[in-house]
Length: 247
Image 1 (cartoon, rainbow, N blue to C red):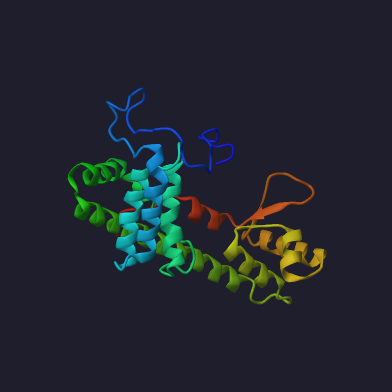
Image 2: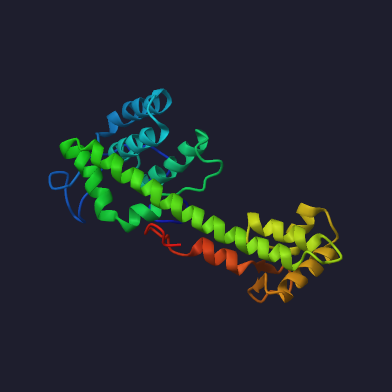
């Protein structure tokens, strides 16, 4: 949380004072939700951690319940939402539901913010777990479709680029395209380190990809130039597609 909102709020430490959630200027008496008092935070987190390890429910149900529980405990003065969302991806990766951290529900929660908060409040106020689980699983489905769409389009670009350099006299351009699959930004020094080739060979490969329109230089630096596979970056940075079949 360095240099972001909340970086002064005892980042990385469990809260020692009472916090609450509500409109700006509200008090605990008028807040929409008041988490457990500070002395209950660590016992609540201990129970939460035990649940994560001992739950025999399907993993998606387990993390749906655990996400609510974490947000209800609200263990930090700030950053609880960010950490809570990150924990979903980390949990599914740790359980090998995801081979890599590809699924992020943040965009779904943000796009349906009212439903998200209504779902959390529905559990706290009325015990509406079923509605929350259905909402959470809908988010998983929508963001999975979005991730698959992005992956498919990225792979299509890479396949086309591989085809365009397939007839080169050296395999270096092909290898550099493979590097773009892991990171759309490349430098000659980075290529040298990853492929173990001469700097001039790496630079010639970049120049070839630049002529083909595969990469372009970012900025105007004369030394240590950074190049980008812009088509891949555009796919990664576009807004999430949350409508079924909107590919």
